[in-house]
Image (tube, rainbow, N blue to C red; front, side, top):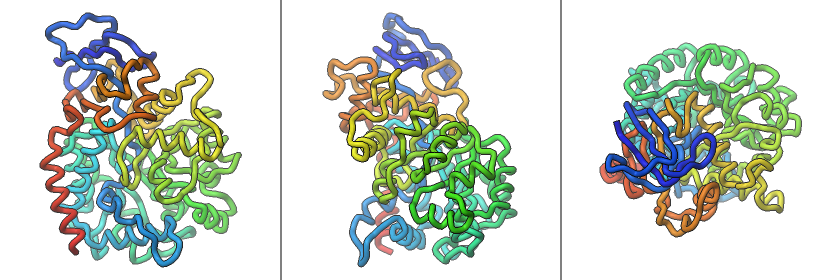
Length: 453
């Protein structure tokens, strides 16, 4: 058993001082407050729960910074997508494993302790299936094991290139599968994650563009208890195309045709009508928000002020992994609201006036729900996933309580996260992942090879 003592810690009922956490077999076995430091305790400063990253496309970490130049015409999500398709023409299983491991290291170093991998890169470069349908999923699991991050694997079903069952394009050949093939993929993926501690499996219909209504119903039946994730209403064009196909925008269609509940995560959900905001907020589903990617791709601004005011659940994702940092995701979420609403502290609430704390706790709860975590936070029985902030960082001088979260999110700079435990194992020390160097070296060699192709 390991005994960790913190000067202050964010417990489920609020901040407490002189907190001892006892960790046994990867879980928190005891939580004691107002305890004196003893020689058997490992002394630390500020403890907060690790966060869930509910939406990642790990392979896209390799593209970060490569699309920031303007093409012959105005760029948008759709031109970026074509660039991504071309990039995929050179990525093999070894590459995916190296890229994902680097992304997962960066997640742990910044405070994410579990990732939901929205995994749709299934096929070989020519579009043919691998001998093992879970070849790529196995590489994702291996990367998670190397980095030490918790994994909720979300195999993605992708069969069509547009609404109404349109045929897929050539650029989508590495994603496409049949329902029968996908069922085999899910079972093989289950085996791929079986050896990982507390890993779990969900199902992810890519979007209403990529599945038919009949296929969607079949996919939901494949996962009667696990998480269900789907892209929805990310783009204005997507909404217009859905209206042309069905007479409804995507989120309204989903709410009318599926039993959307707390197992569902609607990723992005950026472009909502007033009615959709209300219905989604009361459904129990989680809005999977990825503010940095949504800004990078020019997606738009999620109506978070109205959604949160109605009690809607949300979580954070890093999506394209162009930048990996939960504090910066939360900052971008609030700043998007400030810029569009011409106001400050938009996402604070009457009962929690600290904007940082309101955002952090919302993301903690919603992210855990979206990734199938029933017990979370610094509480007995939860996985010992702990983030320690550097008490001696200038941004935290003389801060206490919720202002620690405000400072981390809105004023934090490198070095503010000092130590991270995942299932009680110290994965980050002094701000650096314990295996950062060999993982980064493998990643460097992979990127040099891919760029040279």
